[in-house]
Length: 176
Length: 339
Ligand SMILES: [Zn+2]
Image 1 (spheres, rainbow over the protein chains, first blue to last red):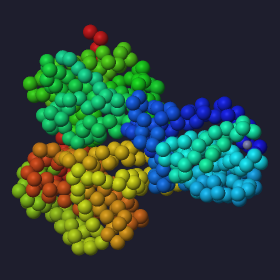
Image 2 (image 1 turned 90 degrees about the vertical axis):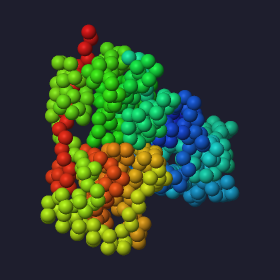
Image 3 (image 1 turned 60 degrees about the horizontal axis):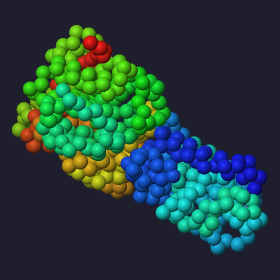
Image 4 (image 1 turned 120 degrees about the vertical axis):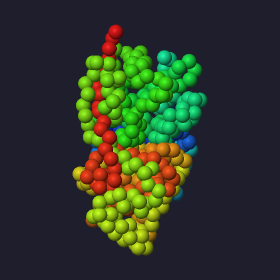
Protein backbone atom coordinates (compact mmCIF):
# COMPACT_ATOMS: atom_id res chain seq x y z
CA UNK A 1 0.00 0.00 0.00
CA UNK A 2 3.04 2.27 0.17
CA UNK A 3 2.32 4.00 -3.11
CA UNK A 4 -1.22 4.76 -2.00
CA UNK A 5 -0.12 6.79 1.00
CA UNK A 6 1.96 9.46 -0.67
CA UNK A 7 -0.89 11.77 -1.67
CA UNK A 8 -3.28 13.07 0.89
CA UNK A 9 -6.93 12.45 -0.04
CA UNK A 10 -7.48 16.16 0.46
CA UNK A 11 -5.61 16.84 -2.79
CA UNK A 12 -7.42 14.10 -4.61
CA UNK A 13 -10.56 15.81 -5.88
CA UNK A 14 -8.84 18.99 -7.11
CA UNK A 15 -6.46 16.79 -9.12
CA UNK A 16 -9.44 15.02 -10.65
CA UNK A 17 -11.08 18.33 -11.51
CA UNK A 18 -7.91 19.48 -13.21
CA UNK A 19 -7.83 16.28 -15.26
CA UNK A 20 -11.48 16.80 -16.26
CA UNK A 21 -10.73 20.32 -17.46
CA UNK A 22 -7.67 19.19 -19.39
CA UNK A 23 -9.69 16.41 -21.03
CA UNK A 24 -12.43 18.86 -21.99
CA UNK A 25 -9.88 21.27 -23.45
CA UNK A 26 -7.74 18.79 -25.37
CA UNK A 27 -9.41 15.39 -25.95
CA UNK A 28 -12.02 15.02 -28.74
CA UNK A 29 -14.24 12.41 -27.06
CA UNK A 30 -14.72 14.35 -23.83
CA UNK A 31 -15.04 17.63 -25.68
CA UNK A 32 -17.96 16.30 -27.65
CA UNK A 33 -19.61 14.35 -24.83
CA UNK A 34 -19.45 17.06 -22.21
CA UNK A 35 -20.09 20.01 -24.54
CA UNK A 36 -23.12 18.59 -26.31
CA UNK A 37 -24.58 16.44 -23.53
CA UNK A 38 -22.91 17.57 -20.35
CA UNK A 39 -21.66 16.18 -17.06
CA UNK A 40 -21.77 16.74 -13.30
CA UNK A 41 -19.15 17.30 -10.58
CA UNK A 42 -17.99 19.50 -12.18
CA UNK A 43 -20.52 20.77 -14.72
CA UNK A 44 -18.67 22.42 -17.58
CA UNK A 45 -21.45 23.94 -19.69
CA UNK A 46 -24.17 25.58 -17.60
CA UNK A 47 -27.39 23.59 -17.78
CA UNK A 48 -25.87 20.52 -19.42
CA UNK A 49 -25.62 17.64 -16.97
CA UNK A 50 -25.41 14.66 -19.32
CA UNK A 51 -27.19 11.34 -19.53
CA UNK A 52 -24.88 9.45 -17.16
CA UNK A 53 -23.32 12.33 -15.23
CA UNK A 54 -20.73 12.45 -18.02
CA UNK A 55 -19.42 8.90 -17.62
CA UNK A 56 -18.45 6.74 -20.59
CA UNK A 57 -19.18 2.99 -20.65
CA UNK A 58 -15.89 1.08 -20.86
CA UNK A 59 -16.97 -0.71 -24.04
CA UNK A 60 -17.58 2.63 -25.75
CA UNK A 61 -14.17 3.88 -24.64
CA UNK A 62 -12.55 0.75 -26.10
CA UNK A 63 -14.28 1.38 -29.44
CA UNK A 64 -13.22 5.03 -29.44
CA UNK A 65 -9.61 4.87 -28.26
CA UNK A 66 -8.34 7.14 -31.08
CA UNK A 67 -10.75 9.83 -29.84
CA UNK A 68 -9.23 9.57 -26.37
CA UNK A 69 -5.84 10.77 -27.61
CA UNK A 70 -5.19 14.45 -26.85
CA UNK A 71 -4.78 16.88 -29.75
CA UNK A 72 -1.02 16.93 -29.34
CA UNK A 73 -0.93 13.19 -30.09
CA UNK A 74 0.03 10.10 -28.16
CA UNK A 75 -0.55 6.36 -28.01
CA UNK A 76 -4.07 5.01 -28.47
CA UNK A 77 -3.54 1.61 -26.88
CA UNK A 78 -4.89 0.58 -23.51
CA UNK A 79 -2.37 -0.69 -20.98
CA UNK A 80 -4.03 -3.52 -18.99
CA UNK A 81 -0.91 -3.84 -16.81
CA UNK A 82 -0.74 -0.20 -15.78
CA UNK A 83 0.02 0.00 -12.08
CA UNK A 84 0.87 -3.67 -11.76
CA UNK A 85 4.57 -3.09 -11.11
CA UNK A 86 3.92 -0.95 -8.02
CA UNK A 87 0.97 -2.95 -6.70
CA UNK A 88 1.58 -5.51 -3.96
CA UNK A 89 1.40 -9.15 -4.95
CA UNK A 90 -2.12 -10.41 -5.11
CA UNK A 91 -4.55 -12.26 -7.26
CA UNK A 92 -5.89 -9.90 -9.94
CA UNK A 93 -9.66 -9.91 -10.30
CA UNK A 94 -11.91 -7.87 -12.58
CA UNK A 95 -14.12 -5.26 -10.91
CA UNK A 96 -17.26 -7.30 -11.56
CA UNK A 97 -15.86 -10.25 -9.59
CA UNK A 98 -14.26 -8.28 -6.74
CA UNK A 99 -17.27 -8.27 -4.44
CA UNK A 100 -17.30 -12.04 -4.10
CA UNK A 101 -13.55 -12.44 -4.11
CA UNK A 102 -12.24 -13.62 -0.72
CA UNK A 103 -8.87 -12.70 0.75
CA UNK A 104 -6.04 -10.66 -0.68
CA UNK A 105 -6.18 -9.42 -4.22
CA UNK A 106 -6.05 -6.51 -6.60
CA UNK A 107 -8.72 -5.17 -8.91
CA UNK A 108 -7.39 -4.99 -12.43
CA UNK A 109 -9.29 -3.87 -15.52
CA UNK A 110 -8.28 -4.60 -19.13
CA UNK A 111 -8.72 -0.97 -20.11
CA UNK A 112 -7.79 0.85 -16.92
CA UNK A 113 -5.14 -1.35 -15.32
CA UNK A 114 -4.87 -1.71 -11.53
CA UNK A 115 -7.60 0.18 -9.69
CA UNK A 116 -7.65 -1.01 -6.08
CA UNK A 117 -5.92 -3.27 -3.61
CA UNK A 118 -7.47 -5.18 -0.71
CA UNK A 119 -5.84 -3.96 2.51
CA UNK A 120 -5.45 -5.75 5.83
CA UNK A 121 -8.70 -4.08 6.95
CA UNK A 122 -10.47 -6.15 4.32
CA UNK A 123 -11.55 -3.13 2.22
CA UNK A 124 -10.71 -2.37 -1.40
CA UNK A 125 -8.40 0.62 -1.19
CA UNK A 126 -8.26 2.71 -4.34
CA UNK A 127 -4.80 3.38 -5.74
CA UNK A 128 -5.69 6.99 -5.32
CA UNK A 129 -2.35 8.34 -6.41
CA UNK A 130 -3.22 7.23 -9.93
CA UNK A 131 -6.94 6.58 -9.85
CA UNK A 132 -10.03 8.60 -9.01
CA UNK A 133 -13.43 7.00 -8.62
CA UNK A 134 -16.97 8.31 -8.41
CA UNK A 135 -20.41 6.76 -8.44
CA UNK A 136 -22.46 7.47 -11.56
CA UNK A 137 -25.72 6.10 -12.98
CA UNK A 138 -23.54 3.71 -15.03
CA UNK A 139 -21.92 2.41 -11.86
CA UNK A 140 -18.47 3.21 -10.54
CA UNK A 141 -16.53 5.38 -12.97
CA UNK A 142 -12.75 5.59 -12.87
CA UNK A 143 -10.28 8.24 -13.96
CA UNK A 144 -6.57 7.71 -14.52
CA UNK A 145 -5.05 10.85 -13.01
CA UNK A 146 -1.60 10.48 -14.52
CA UNK A 147 -2.10 8.81 -17.90
CA UNK A 148 -1.90 11.41 -20.67
CA UNK A 149 -2.83 9.17 -23.61
CA UNK A 150 -5.23 7.62 -24.12
CA UNK A 151 -6.88 9.83 -21.53
CA UNK A 152 -9.33 7.80 -19.45
CA UNK A 153 -11.77 9.95 -17.51
CA UNK A 154 -14.95 8.69 -15.84
CA UNK A 155 -14.82 5.30 -17.48
CA UNK A 156 -17.49 2.93 -16.18
CA UNK A 157 -16.79 -0.82 -16.44
CA UNK A 158 -20.41 -1.44 -15.47
CA UNK A 159 -20.31 -2.38 -11.79
CA UNK A 160 -22.39 -0.60 -9.18
CA UNK A 161 -20.65 0.61 -6.07
CA UNK A 162 -19.84 3.54 -3.84
CA UNK A 163 -16.74 5.49 -2.88
CA UNK A 164 -16.05 6.07 0.78
CA UNK A 165 -13.26 6.48 3.28
CA UNK A 166 -11.74 3.61 5.20
CA UNK A 167 -12.57 4.12 8.91
CA UNK A 168 -9.26 2.57 9.89
CA UNK A 169 -6.84 4.00 7.34
CA UNK A 170 -8.74 7.16 6.39
CA UNK A 171 -8.09 6.50 2.71
CA UNK A 172 -10.52 6.25 -0.25
CA UNK A 173 -12.09 2.84 -0.69
CA UNK A 174 -14.60 1.39 -3.11
CA UNK A 175 -17.57 -0.40 -1.62
CA UNK A 176 -19.04 -3.00 -3.94
CA UNK B 1 -27.81 48.06 -39.06
CA UNK B 2 -28.62 46.08 -35.94
CA UNK B 3 -26.50 42.95 -35.47
CA UNK B 4 -26.64 39.64 -33.60
CA UNK B 5 -23.15 38.30 -32.85
CA UNK B 6 -23.69 34.67 -31.86
CA UNK B 7 -21.58 31.86 -30.47
CA UNK B 8 -23.18 28.65 -31.79
CA UNK B 9 -21.72 26.71 -28.88
CA UNK B 10 -23.95 28.31 -26.32
CA UNK B 11 -26.42 30.53 -28.15
CA UNK B 12 -29.61 28.69 -29.11
CA UNK B 13 -30.68 28.51 -32.73
CA UNK B 14 -32.34 31.84 -33.59
CA UNK B 15 -36.03 31.62 -34.53
CA UNK B 16 -35.29 33.14 -37.93
CA UNK B 17 -32.43 30.73 -38.77
CA UNK B 18 -34.31 28.26 -41.02
CA UNK B 19 -35.86 31.05 -43.09
CA UNK B 20 -32.54 32.84 -43.33
CA UNK B 21 -30.75 29.70 -44.53
CA UNK B 22 -33.39 29.08 -47.19
CA UNK B 23 -33.40 32.66 -48.36
CA UNK B 24 -29.62 32.87 -48.49
CA UNK B 25 -29.10 29.40 -49.94
CA UNK B 26 -26.74 28.48 -47.10
CA UNK B 27 -25.85 24.81 -47.29
CA UNK B 28 -26.05 22.21 -44.53
CA UNK B 29 -22.74 23.29 -43.01
CA UNK B 30 -24.75 26.30 -41.79
CA UNK B 31 -27.38 24.18 -40.01
CA UNK B 32 -27.31 25.35 -36.40
CA UNK B 33 -26.54 21.97 -34.76
CA UNK B 34 -23.72 21.51 -37.30
CA UNK B 35 -22.34 24.97 -36.51
CA UNK B 36 -22.56 24.19 -32.80
CA UNK B 37 -20.58 20.96 -32.88
CA UNK B 38 -18.11 22.49 -35.30
CA UNK B 39 -17.51 25.43 -32.97
CA UNK B 40 -17.02 23.11 -29.98
CA UNK B 41 -14.37 21.27 -31.97
CA UNK B 42 -12.53 24.41 -33.11
CA UNK B 43 -9.31 25.79 -31.71
CA UNK B 44 -10.51 29.35 -32.03
CA UNK B 45 -13.91 30.84 -31.19
CA UNK B 46 -16.33 30.76 -34.11
CA UNK B 47 -18.77 33.64 -34.43
CA UNK B 48 -21.90 33.89 -36.53
CA UNK B 49 -23.03 37.45 -37.17
CA UNK B 50 -26.44 38.37 -38.55
CA UNK B 51 -27.19 41.89 -39.75
CA UNK B 52 -30.74 43.25 -39.80
CA UNK B 53 -32.63 45.85 -41.75
CA UNK B 54 -35.35 46.60 -39.20
CA UNK B 55 -36.54 43.16 -38.14
CA UNK B 56 -35.40 41.45 -41.30
CA UNK B 57 -32.09 39.55 -41.51
CA UNK B 58 -30.23 40.85 -44.58
CA UNK B 59 -26.75 39.38 -44.11
CA UNK B 60 -24.95 36.54 -42.34
CA UNK B 61 -21.24 36.06 -41.74
CA UNK B 62 -19.29 33.12 -40.37
CA UNK B 63 -15.87 33.89 -38.95
CA UNK B 64 -13.17 32.41 -36.78
CA UNK B 65 -11.69 34.80 -34.21
CA UNK B 66 -7.98 34.24 -34.67
CA UNK B 67 -5.89 35.78 -32.00
CA UNK B 68 -3.59 35.62 -29.05
CA UNK B 69 -3.25 33.71 -26.92
CA UNK B 70 -4.08 30.68 -29.07
CA UNK B 71 -3.68 27.04 -28.15
CA UNK B 72 -2.35 24.84 -30.88
CA UNK B 73 -3.26 21.72 -28.98
CA UNK B 74 -6.43 22.80 -27.28
CA UNK B 75 -10.00 23.62 -28.19
CA UNK B 76 -11.18 27.18 -27.81
CA UNK B 77 -12.29 27.98 -24.29
CA UNK B 78 -15.94 28.83 -23.93
CA UNK B 79 -16.68 32.23 -22.49
CA UNK B 80 -13.24 33.70 -23.02
CA UNK B 81 -11.91 35.30 -26.16
CA UNK B 82 -8.46 36.25 -27.29
CA UNK B 83 -7.79 39.87 -26.46
CA UNK B 84 -5.98 40.62 -29.69
CA UNK B 85 -6.71 39.25 -33.10
CA UNK B 86 -8.51 39.33 -36.41
CA UNK B 87 -11.70 37.84 -37.75
CA UNK B 88 -11.23 35.27 -40.44
CA UNK B 89 -14.35 35.20 -42.62
CA UNK B 90 -14.74 31.83 -44.29
CA UNK B 91 -17.35 29.18 -44.96
CA UNK B 92 -18.01 27.11 -41.83
CA UNK B 93 -17.55 23.75 -43.50
CA UNK B 94 -16.20 24.46 -46.94
CA UNK B 95 -13.58 26.76 -48.39
CA UNK B 96 -15.17 26.34 -51.83
CA UNK B 97 -17.70 29.11 -51.22
CA UNK B 98 -17.62 32.43 -49.33
CA UNK B 99 -18.37 32.61 -45.62
CA UNK B 100 -20.88 35.37 -45.99
CA UNK B 101 -24.20 36.15 -47.60
CA UNK B 102 -25.88 39.49 -48.06
CA UNK B 103 -29.25 40.25 -49.62
CA UNK B 104 -29.13 41.58 -53.15
CA UNK B 105 -30.44 45.02 -52.25
CA UNK B 106 -27.68 45.61 -49.68
CA UNK B 107 -24.63 47.30 -51.24
CA UNK B 108 -21.51 45.24 -50.58
CA UNK B 109 -19.55 48.20 -49.18
CA UNK B 110 -22.34 48.99 -46.74
CA UNK B 111 -22.55 45.34 -45.66
CA UNK B 112 -18.79 45.04 -45.10
CA UNK B 113 -18.75 48.26 -43.12
CA UNK B 114 -21.71 47.22 -40.94
CA UNK B 115 -20.11 43.85 -40.27
CA UNK B 116 -16.81 45.39 -39.20
CA UNK B 117 -18.64 47.77 -36.87
CA UNK B 118 -20.65 44.94 -35.32
CA UNK B 119 -17.51 42.88 -34.79
CA UNK B 120 -15.66 45.82 -33.27
CA UNK B 121 -18.55 46.47 -30.90
CA UNK B 122 -18.68 42.81 -29.84
CA UNK B 123 -14.96 42.11 -29.57
CA UNK B 124 -13.58 45.43 -28.42
CA UNK B 125 -10.41 47.30 -29.35
CA UNK B 126 -8.42 44.07 -29.74
CA UNK B 127 -10.24 43.42 -33.03
CA UNK B 128 -7.50 44.54 -35.37
CA UNK B 129 -9.16 43.69 -38.63
CA UNK B 130 -11.08 41.32 -40.85
CA UNK B 131 -9.61 38.81 -43.29
CA UNK B 132 -12.10 38.01 -46.05
CA UNK B 133 -11.61 34.82 -48.02
CA UNK B 134 -13.14 33.72 -51.32
CA UNK B 135 -13.60 37.32 -52.49
CA UNK B 136 -14.20 37.75 -56.23
CA UNK B 137 -11.88 40.28 -57.91
CA UNK B 138 -14.84 42.52 -58.78
CA UNK B 139 -15.83 42.66 -55.08
CA UNK B 140 -12.45 43.75 -53.77
CA UNK B 141 -12.79 47.52 -54.02
CA UNK B 142 -16.15 47.62 -52.30
CA UNK B 143 -15.03 45.52 -49.36
CA UNK B 144 -11.61 46.98 -48.76
CA UNK B 145 -12.55 50.64 -48.57
CA UNK B 146 -9.18 51.84 -49.93
CA UNK B 147 -7.25 50.56 -46.90
CA UNK B 148 -7.16 46.77 -47.26
CA UNK B 149 -4.49 44.54 -48.67
CA UNK B 150 -5.48 42.06 -51.38
CA UNK B 151 -3.75 38.81 -52.20
CA UNK B 152 -4.73 36.61 -55.10
CA UNK B 153 -4.93 33.00 -53.93
CA UNK B 154 -5.49 29.67 -55.66
CA UNK B 155 -8.56 29.65 -57.92
CA UNK B 156 -11.79 27.85 -57.07
CA UNK B 157 -12.98 25.23 -59.52
CA UNK B 158 -16.53 24.71 -60.77
CA UNK B 159 -17.97 22.12 -63.15
CA UNK B 160 -20.84 23.91 -64.86
CA UNK B 161 -23.10 20.87 -65.05
CA UNK B 162 -26.07 22.97 -66.22
CA UNK B 163 -24.54 23.00 -69.68
CA UNK B 164 -25.20 19.33 -70.28
CA UNK B 165 -28.33 17.24 -70.38
CA UNK B 166 -26.69 13.91 -69.63
CA UNK B 167 -23.40 12.44 -68.55
CA UNK B 168 -22.47 11.42 -72.07
CA UNK B 169 -22.52 15.08 -73.15
CA UNK B 170 -20.21 15.95 -70.32
CA UNK B 171 -17.81 13.15 -71.24
CA UNK B 172 -17.80 14.36 -74.85
CA UNK B 173 -16.69 17.79 -73.65
CA UNK B 174 -13.53 16.34 -72.10
CA UNK B 175 -10.24 15.53 -73.79
CA UNK B 176 -10.17 12.22 -75.58
CA UNK B 177 -7.62 10.75 -73.21
CA UNK B 178 -9.53 11.80 -70.08
CA UNK B 179 -12.77 10.54 -71.60
CA UNK B 180 -11.46 7.06 -72.35
CA UNK B 181 -9.69 7.00 -69.00
CA UNK B 182 -12.96 7.84 -67.18
CA UNK B 183 -14.95 5.30 -69.17
CA UNK B 184 -12.36 2.70 -68.23
CA UNK B 185 -12.51 3.63 -64.56
CA UNK B 186 -16.32 3.59 -64.41
CA UNK B 187 -16.43 0.28 -66.27
CA UNK B 188 -13.86 -1.27 -63.95
CA UNK B 189 -15.64 -0.10 -60.80
CA UNK B 190 -19.07 -1.14 -62.06
CA UNK B 191 -17.74 -4.60 -62.86
CA UNK B 192 -16.20 -4.91 -59.40
CA UNK B 193 -18.79 -6.96 -57.54
CA UNK B 194 -16.92 -6.53 -54.31
CA UNK B 195 -17.26 -2.73 -54.37
CA UNK B 196 -20.40 -1.43 -52.75
CA UNK B 197 -21.34 2.20 -53.35
CA UNK B 198 -23.80 3.58 -50.84
CA UNK B 199 -25.30 7.03 -51.31
CA UNK B 200 -27.43 8.33 -48.46
CA UNK B 201 -29.16 11.57 -47.58
CA UNK B 202 -30.04 12.47 -44.01
CA UNK B 203 -28.02 9.44 -42.98
CA UNK B 204 -27.25 7.99 -39.59
CA UNK B 205 -23.57 7.14 -39.99
CA UNK B 206 -20.96 5.52 -37.80
CA UNK B 207 -18.28 8.20 -37.67
CA UNK B 208 -15.50 5.82 -36.54
CA UNK B 209 -14.69 4.18 -39.90
CA UNK B 210 -14.99 7.59 -41.55
CA UNK B 211 -12.45 9.03 -39.11
CA UNK B 212 -10.24 6.02 -39.72
CA UNK B 213 -10.29 6.64 -43.48
CA UNK B 214 -9.56 10.32 -42.89
CA UNK B 215 -6.54 9.44 -40.77
CA UNK B 216 -5.04 7.16 -43.38
CA UNK B 217 -5.84 9.69 -46.03
CA UNK B 218 -3.43 12.08 -44.44
CA UNK B 219 -0.32 10.36 -45.74
CA UNK B 220 2.13 12.50 -43.85
CA UNK B 221 1.14 10.92 -40.56
CA UNK B 222 2.32 7.47 -39.61
CA UNK B 223 0.23 4.97 -37.74
CA UNK B 224 2.19 4.99 -34.50
CA UNK B 225 0.71 8.13 -33.01
CA UNK B 226 -2.90 8.79 -33.71
CA UNK B 227 -3.08 12.08 -35.54
CA UNK B 228 -6.06 14.25 -34.93
CA UNK B 229 -8.93 14.31 -37.35
CA UNK B 230 -9.78 17.89 -38.06
CA UNK B 231 -13.36 17.60 -36.88
CA UNK B 232 -15.18 15.87 -34.03
CA UNK B 233 -16.94 12.58 -34.73
CA UNK B 234 -20.15 14.32 -33.73
CA UNK B 235 -19.60 16.81 -36.54
CA UNK B 236 -19.46 14.02 -39.12
CA UNK B 237 -22.62 12.48 -37.68
CA UNK B 238 -24.53 15.76 -37.47
CA UNK B 239 -23.55 16.87 -40.98
CA UNK B 240 -24.45 13.47 -42.48
CA UNK B 241 -27.83 13.62 -40.74
CA UNK B 242 -28.86 16.81 -42.56
CA UNK B 243 -31.51 16.17 -45.23
CA UNK B 244 -29.56 18.18 -47.82
CA UNK B 245 -26.28 16.30 -47.39
CA UNK B 246 -25.34 13.33 -49.55
CA UNK B 247 -22.97 10.85 -47.93
CA UNK B 248 -21.03 8.61 -50.32
CA UNK B 249 -19.62 5.43 -48.77
CA UNK B 250 -17.45 3.06 -50.76
CA UNK B 251 -17.26 -0.32 -49.05
CA UNK B 252 -15.48 -3.61 -49.48
CA UNK B 253 -18.48 -5.95 -49.68
CA UNK B 254 -16.63 -9.03 -48.42
CA UNK B 255 -15.21 -7.39 -45.29
CA UNK B 256 -17.66 -4.53 -44.82
CA UNK B 257 -14.68 -2.24 -44.55
CA UNK B 258 -15.08 1.42 -45.52
CA UNK B 259 -12.63 2.23 -48.32
CA UNK B 260 -13.56 5.83 -49.05
CA UNK B 261 -16.01 8.47 -47.96
CA UNK B 262 -17.24 11.78 -49.33
CA UNK B 263 -19.86 14.43 -48.57
CA UNK B 264 -21.76 16.55 -51.05
CA UNK B 265 -23.59 19.58 -49.67
CA UNK B 266 -26.66 20.01 -51.84
CA UNK B 267 -27.98 23.36 -53.01
CA UNK B 268 -30.77 24.25 -55.46
CA UNK B 269 -28.22 25.57 -57.94
CA UNK B 270 -24.68 24.94 -56.72
CA UNK B 271 -23.90 21.87 -54.62
CA UNK B 272 -20.46 21.65 -53.05
CA UNK B 273 -18.28 18.54 -53.30
CA UNK B 274 -17.00 18.95 -49.81
CA UNK B 275 -14.63 16.25 -48.75
CA UNK B 276 -13.09 13.09 -50.01
CA UNK B 277 -10.99 10.60 -48.07
CA UNK B 278 -9.82 7.16 -49.04
CA UNK B 279 -7.62 4.42 -47.74
CA UNK B 280 -4.18 4.26 -49.36
CA UNK B 281 -3.78 1.39 -51.81
CA UNK B 282 -1.49 -0.58 -49.51
CA UNK B 283 -4.32 -0.57 -46.96
CA UNK B 284 -6.88 -1.95 -49.36
CA UNK B 285 -7.81 1.30 -51.09
CA UNK B 286 -8.79 1.35 -54.76
CA UNK B 287 -6.93 3.31 -57.41
CA UNK B 288 -8.85 6.07 -59.20
CA UNK B 289 -11.84 5.89 -56.89
CA UNK B 290 -11.84 9.69 -56.71
CA UNK B 291 -12.49 9.93 -60.45
CA UNK B 292 -15.27 7.39 -60.19
CA UNK B 293 -16.75 9.42 -57.35
CA UNK B 294 -16.59 12.70 -59.23
CA UNK B 295 -18.09 11.13 -62.35
CA UNK B 296 -20.98 9.86 -60.28
CA UNK B 297 -21.53 13.21 -58.55
CA UNK B 298 -21.37 15.03 -61.90
CA UNK B 299 -23.95 12.60 -63.32
CA UNK B 300 -26.24 13.26 -60.37
CA UNK B 301 -25.80 17.04 -60.68
CA UNK B 302 -26.68 16.93 -64.39
CA UNK B 303 -29.71 14.72 -63.78
CA UNK B 304 -30.96 17.03 -61.05
CA UNK B 305 -30.51 20.11 -63.21
CA UNK B 306 -28.00 21.80 -60.91
CA UNK B 307 -26.12 24.69 -62.54
CA UNK B 308 -22.71 23.92 -61.17
CA UNK B 309 -20.70 21.72 -58.85
CA UNK B 310 -18.30 23.61 -56.60
CA UNK B 311 -15.07 21.66 -56.20
CA UNK B 312 -13.00 24.13 -54.21
CA UNK B 313 -9.33 24.76 -54.71
CA UNK B 314 -6.37 22.46 -55.31
CA UNK B 315 -5.81 19.48 -57.62
CA UNK B 316 -6.12 21.98 -60.48
CA UNK B 317 -4.84 19.72 -63.24
CA UNK B 318 -7.24 16.90 -62.40
CA UNK B 319 -10.18 19.25 -61.98
CA UNK B 320 -9.48 21.02 -65.24
CA UNK B 321 -9.29 17.69 -67.05
CA UNK B 322 -12.76 16.89 -65.69
CA UNK B 323 -14.20 19.99 -67.29
CA UNK B 324 -14.00 22.31 -64.29
CA UNK B 325 -13.35 26.02 -64.78
CA UNK B 326 -11.42 28.28 -62.45
CA UNK B 327 -12.71 31.39 -60.71
CA UNK B 328 -10.11 33.77 -59.45
CA UNK B 329 -10.35 34.50 -55.78
CA UNK B 330 -8.76 37.00 -53.48
CA UNK B 331 -7.96 37.02 -49.78
CA UNK B 332 -8.46 40.47 -48.40
CA UNK B 333 -7.13 41.84 -45.12
CA UNK B 334 -8.93 44.96 -43.97
CA UNK B 335 -7.65 46.68 -40.83
CA UNK B 336 -10.25 48.02 -38.43
CA UNK B 337 -10.93 51.68 -38.98
CA UNK B 338 -11.65 53.73 -35.90
CA UNK B 339 -13.36 56.57 -37.68
ZN1 LIG C 1 -8.38 0.32 5.21
